[in-house]
Image 1 (cartoon, one colour):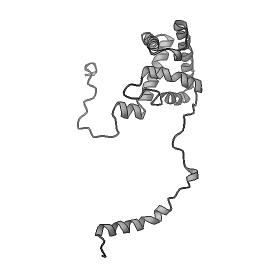
Image 2 (spheres, rainbow, N blue to C red; image 1 turned 45 degrees about the vertical axis):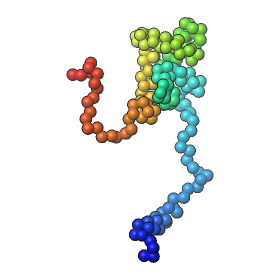
Image 3 (tube, rainbow, N blue to C red; image 1 turned 180 degrees about the horizontal axis):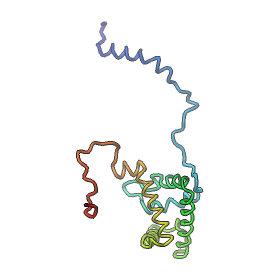
Image 4 (cartoon, one colour; image 1 turned 45 degrees about the horizontal axis):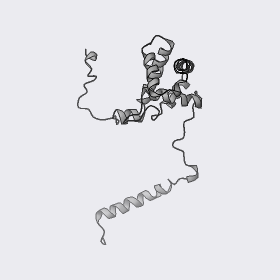
Length: 180
């Protein structure tokens, strides 16, 4: 063995065996697949997507973790609406009603409210769950939570979930009111 170690010989044999397969795996760089691109709404207009961002961010704001818009929640909501026309109609009606309510209270539409006023409006909607706007808020809040905690930002960055991990014990919910 002229100065080569056994490991070097085995590596050379493995490389020569793999070389023909590697040549067949070359790619035409002009036809690369684009991995990601800007989201193109399926149901909502661009203006409605822009309107939706401050609402979902009021529900899950950016803190030391990403906010709802950072996690792509408006796009997740739009994809849900594409599967349910009745939900899309309900959402659009609620958006118009929320703008009307904000215009009545503050003379501006929801998207133009500052954080304090947006919180006041949404808190009052949550306190009135039997009204049309209360139902709208519950629906949008549920969609926002589903979208956020289905995203990488919600699952991994906020909740710390990183896939299948071994748990030596699972205690379940530890809230006293949920214990049997």
